[in-house]
Length: 379
Ligand SMILES: [Zn+2]
Image (tube, rainbow, N blue to C red; front, side):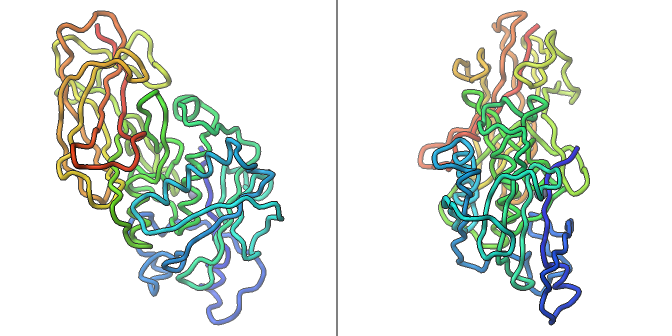
């Protein structure tokens, strides 16, 4: 499976011909050494960090108005993507503005556009060039005009269906590159396989964001902002490595001895695998908890488990509260136990959800990543 691409213009030239001026020849390098977590690329250790925009820079991108008309769904999705970095843990300041001028590499302007050229068949590409080993000077982002895309976070996309790809997820990933992050294969994270780094909760809506590891990477580059706590829940988790990317999988429902529960008469509900359970028995729901924000989240995170009769989580009965403790480093993959009520209706499908509600006195930046669920069938 092919994912996304990052292309570094001039980094290799700089490494090979330090001291001489870089020619206009564009060297395309796909790098895999720099991680989105705090990790130092051995080729640029003098920076003591990955190359980034100079500290304190307000970074503006020009969105091509033909590709991204004012008020269009593509523009709304694009703004959602960078806004989630902007209001994340790191001290950065991003904006976009509509632009009717031309688009080009190395023209001193950060541009974003759709094209069937220069994407090398990938959904999105970030072209990043550097003024020196430590600082980015320009980052252009091209999205593949062939798609197929959806601009809506409504679960009618990967990984719940084979296609289309969700634009917001790809855009969050490409902005990660444009801000100085490279691919990451060690954790559940947005700089791995972006299409499966998401949550799905209330109203069955989906939500793509930088996540804990992506935010950690930007904090390493730019320092932390203040006062932006954000806890995120998802059933997605780390699976393995594919090239430079992490791959991710759905968490499941396990018995107390750790065995995956059996399948349901209908294998998938709403694109998610369903697990068959027995009334009165205790199970474990696999959940990933991400601490996406800066300080300000509770030291003990209360997570409520509900048994819902509808996939939008609008009708449910409370089962139990579990508490977890998270630091801010890598996503915390855990199992939360619950008992299927003896009074639950037989031969019926439900959705067991894990939900975070900030306790009194605490705030939480995004609510769309506060719930996650798995379909179950009560035998
Ligand atoms: Zn990439």
